[in-house]
Amino acid sequence: MKVIYEREEGDVGIATLILFIAIIIVAAIASSLIIYVGVTLREQGEKIAKETVSQITTSLRVLNILGDRDPDGMDSNIISVKAPVSADHDAPLGGVITNVTLNSANPLSVKIIWNSAKDEMSGMWKEVIYRMGGDYQTLKSMLGDENYVKAAGKVIAVLYENFTDNRSYVDYSVQPDETYGYAIIGYDRAGNAVLYSAINQTVHVPTGTPDTTAPSGTVESIQTSGYGVIITWHATDDGSGIAMQKIYRAKKQITSSNIHNATLIAEVGNTTFKYMDYPPSTGTWYYAIVGEDRAGNSALYTATVDHVNITMADTSSPTTPQGLHYEVGPYFIKLRWRGAEDEESGILEYEIFRSKNYNALTSPAIFSKPPYAVVKNTSFVDYRYTPYESYNYLVVAVDKAGNHCDVVYPQSTLQILQIKVALGPGSQPVDFNTVIVEISDGAKDVSLKLNSNGFGINGSDSSHYSVSIVNDPTGEFEKSYILEDGAIVIMYINCRAAGLSLTSQSTAEMKLIAGDGIPVYREITVPPIMLNRFVQIY
Image 1 (cartoon, helix red, strand yellow):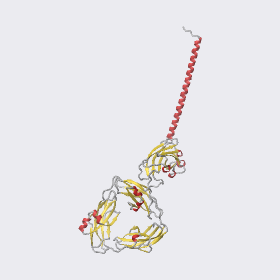
Image 2 (cartoon, rainbow, N blue to C red):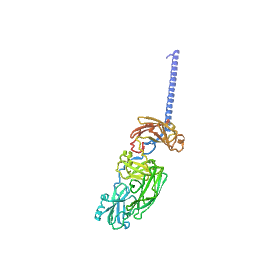
Image 3 (cartoon, one colour):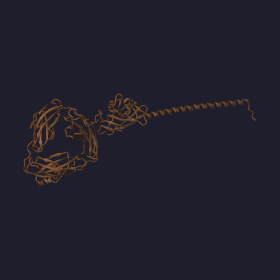
Image 4 (cartoon, rainbow, N blue to C red):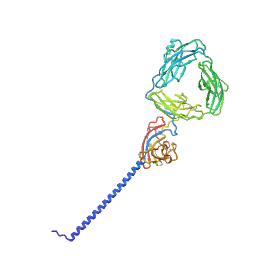
């Protein structure tokens, strides 16, 4: 049996106590560590959650980005178009001269009757009537050859509308005791031609009295009206009838001997006896009118008064047509634009110039050449092109005084960026007073804040972006610049003022920072610009 002494019992008790205290200390330390780790993890979790919530609840969504090449908000009146892959190369169908006969003996004349050709692609453009003289056998041979008709025939009329069956035209310029043959060539709007066939196209004109008497008329008054001059007259012709009347203007008196030096300002029909002219400058201007009948006789009308003193003249250019754009179809290129304005004399017409060479349209010499087309309305359809080719068009407004609008040339770089934005999914309202835009073209970095002094493109400058409202259901953005759900705005970045160079095919990096929310990153790649003012980027 083991005997335990009192001293040994004391040693065991102390050791047990020390062990117990150690266990308590370790437990306390472990507990403290666990609590610290827990608190730290909780704080980190709360921070991450807070950041995540912040990012989710404050964000912007870019709907699109548009580049504007013109710094002054003016559209260029030059546009580049790539022609469609196909074109109308088919000639019109049909067209037949049904009869050629004497119309009357006094005055001598021949009546041509025909059915017009049809064209389902580009449509009919014009009909050109030719006349040739000779014997029957020679005429029969010549009139069946389109090239010979164009080379040897005399054009007696060109008609541009009413392409129907049983059309008629009376030729009053024939001579007695002559044999004539007639041919008609019809053209579609693409320039394709067809020589009309004929049931009967020749006639012998017997003896008779041709119309050799010119129209007669009198200029009754010439009066100023604002920037213009109103001319009134009367005229008659008892023979073949008035075909047209030509109005001339000059700085000195116009006579039969010097009328070739005067300016022909207008040609009007046989029912017009009043005309308004807009002289190019002040001073004294003379006017004269020549009447021409269907037989080709012409004469200068007499004048009660032949001049007027001008104190106001329209020397201002009309505005440049805006919104020039195009569309292409299977067989056409169509241009559209918004009408120009002119407060003095008003818009007369639009001249269309076309060239494959862009530089040809930028030269002032372009106005010394005839335009490709002239239209009175604000659209033009071109059917004459080579598939796949690129064409440049210039649309120029001309007022009634003959002034041309300015030519607005596209810039070589993007001048303005238009960024359309709305709230991101689930986002809370975003205060644009805290939104920063950072953008870099690789050579320059800029940081822009909101210009809160006004709306619109003019508010953007070297250190500010501006905004305009597309949709603001509650009206809150207009009042406080706070973007709410359903609202859409456009942000304007003035690249020119900020010193950014966004040339064709260059790149830039952009960041929209919405307070503590998620920054929106976009890499902008500028596409080949061609000649259009606006360039879709995103």
